[in-house]
Each structure stands twice: as C-alpha cells, then as structure tokens.
Length: 192
Image (cartoon, rainbow, N blue to C red; front, top):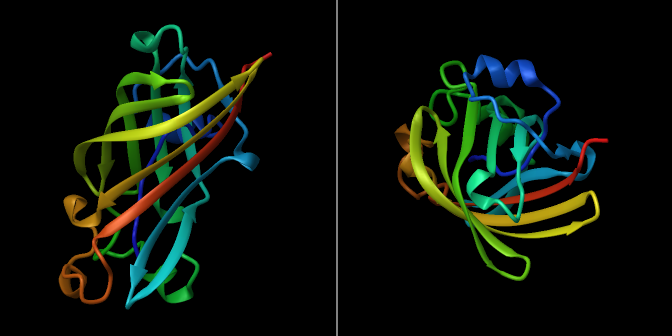
C-alpha cells in the first residue's frame, strides 16, 4: 500500500494535465521516452516486501549540465495510476486513508536547484507535494548524456507519514512500514 512520488524526469505527453495542475510552464529541452522510463516504489507490508509503479506521469525538463542554475524540472504524477502489484493494495491506494485521489489527484515534484557532485553524480533539491503536503527533498541521481540521448537513475527514501499517507488503522507501522523507496529511471532525447 503506499506511495509516491514523484519525480524527476518523466514525460511531456500530457500537457493538459500539467496545465490543470497549475504547474508552472518550463521551456523543455528534453523529451522523455515513456516506454523506457519509470517511477517505481517499494515498501514492506506485514513483513513482505513489495514493489509498484506509477503508469501515468508527465514532466517538463529543461536541463543543461553546463547551466545548472538555469535548469528546471517539473513532474506531475497521476496518483490514481499506482500499481502496487496486488488487487487489495491497488484497491486501497486511491482511497481516503492513502492517496485520497478524489481530493488530491496529482503529486508534484518541482526542482529548486541542482548540484554536480562529480563525474555522473548529481543531486536535485525539490519540493515534493503529495496529498496536499509539500516537503523539501534531495534526490541523488546519476546522469549519462551521449550526443542527444540521456539516461537518469535516482533513488529516494521517504517517510509516508510526512505526507499523511496511511491514516486510521494504517497510521502505525503494524501493517505497513513508514519508509518507502522511490526509484526513478528516465531516458530522454533532445527534440529534433
């Protein structure tokens, strides 16, 4: 049952959903290959590990390793598109105790700054909004750019309770642990 996220470089395929979410416009200079990109998550329920993913996400990406100050990423995630690998979990996630998608249909990840750590290693500071709660996060990631093709991979640990995800009987860790790991992989290309 869980979670999240959101994040980093995802896909520009649904500009209407981004606009409805009042996401600031970003002049994108990368187009995400959704077939080769993913936003996944993993956690543990009743001592059993499970994984899941979000099948519908949109992003506007303007990233230049030579101009990190001018780089910006905004990602919008359709929270109802979560698949946690189990019919019971999938049935519960959209509900009021978890994502409450009726009131909070989208999550948002908006970068506030990038840092180059050396080689292919970077990190992005961002505001992550889930279920109406915004928190600052740091997502470390690797980035390989060859010609007009980029591959980004990152991983972030979150506490679901920081976002009021899992209320009522799910608030404690008796059934579902609080820590959720978000795993992001993005392949993107420069537009022709």
